[in-house]
Amino acid sequence: MPNLIDDILGYAIEKEIEWSRQELHILILGAYKPESAKKRLERLRDCLSERGYGNTYLVADYPDDNKSDESWSVYWERKSNESMLHSDLNLFVFFANCSNEGVTDELAYFCSEIKKFSGCYVICEDSYESDISTRIKAKVERCVLYNTTIEDGNDAELCDAAYAFAEMTNTRHAKNH
Image 1 (tube, rainbow, N blue to C red):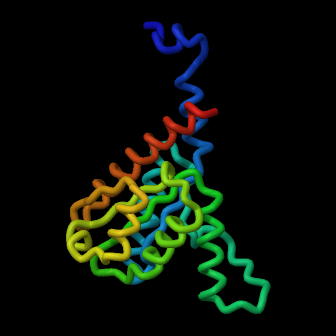
Image 2: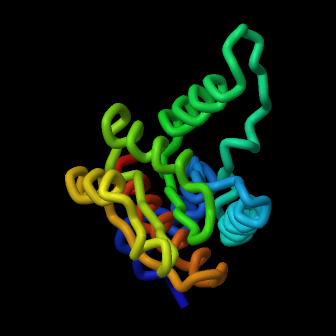
């Protein structure tokens, strides 16, 4: 059966979309403590990679090259800020029962400095959503960021939500190139 989209457009759009999936740079930002939270972020990265988004990273995936005299906390802040700047899609993940101060600061930096809102999504677990700080609520509302709530501990739902956001970003990205 012929592909009607390809027939109408005159080229293999399916191949272009698949190529665009591989090219889309995704950064996942979230809590690394406790260790179980970081493991969940790693599973999310691997899930997106398995679904065709092989250019998906955590900040921790990038090599540490702190060659200056700055402290490690200052270095990590700079590293995450630079990583967000060079990503097509930034996923901010807020887990329940975790230390979310880092991802809160990263979201605040993104909203005030980077401002590529079409490439930014916020995902919160149910029980964290009820305790979301006014600082995060204000940023999400003022910057009109897309956000969703997932069931606590449901990594399949987390992956599905992140995949949906990646597909929306990929579609926009493919249209503009």
